[in-house]
Amino acid sequence: MDDDITVTADGIDTYHLVKEAGRYREVNRTAGVSTTDLVGRMLLLTREHFKRGDKEYTVALEHSSNLGTDSTARSPYTGCSQFLPTTQKIIQFSSGLSPKPTDKVVYVAGAFDLFHVGHLDFLEAAHAHGDFLIVGLHTDLEVNRYKGSNYPIMNLHERVLSVLACKYVHEVVIGAPYSVTAELMDHFRVEVVCHGLTPIALDADGSDPYKVPKQRGCFKVLNSGNSMTTEDIVQRIIRHRLEFEERNTRKEKKEIAQMKSTQKEHIKQNGNCEYKAYSG
Image (cartoon, rainbow, N blue to C red; front, side, top):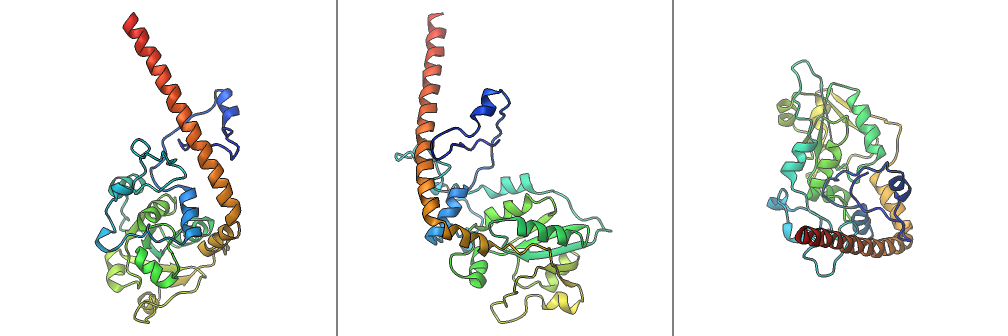
């Protein structure tokens, strides 16, 4: 299990039985945004998580969650998001591999927002058409241009890490151009360009973003057999808005209470150890 505090809305430790049996192990999770934060972005239609222009690859530390200095003691799991130190994290997730001269390189592009099973099935289908799969990820502003509303729900950094975690993906192009250009295809030696069954929005100038791969005869439309979309997930969350709000409010209060209790116990134990060391 990761180190996220897991309690039910009633404050019960989800893994208490496993812990009592001595079979619980904990590992540190990747610092970043929580599920609760993503739900909040959907419900509140916020855009503060977007990265803009030259800020696309910077880390806004002043907005990071920090329980030690936050006087309101908000839970880091259900409170504000933590911005990701991209360079370090991307290296950890990237395969670090380059295509071999004999590899058939496949390229796909999109937002890949709220990475879900529909994306997974599509990437598996795309990977089957070659040996090395590259995913182009559009910037937040580009995604917002063709999707509108407050999309993307996850910013570029978060989407990069989500896609790199997929076993079918070998590498990503961060901030890929919306139109698949000849320069991009030649640079990465792309032999196949794939797209799913979702509608293809035109580029800002009204052109077909897949004109070049179509002219080269290497464009494929794939049916992954999974019709789930990011919009489906967002609409599902919105339909259950009140239920989620009530649950998250209760959960956050319980998490804060448990963290304070854990901190007090830690101080108590350390205090006892220090006293014994001094008296001994």
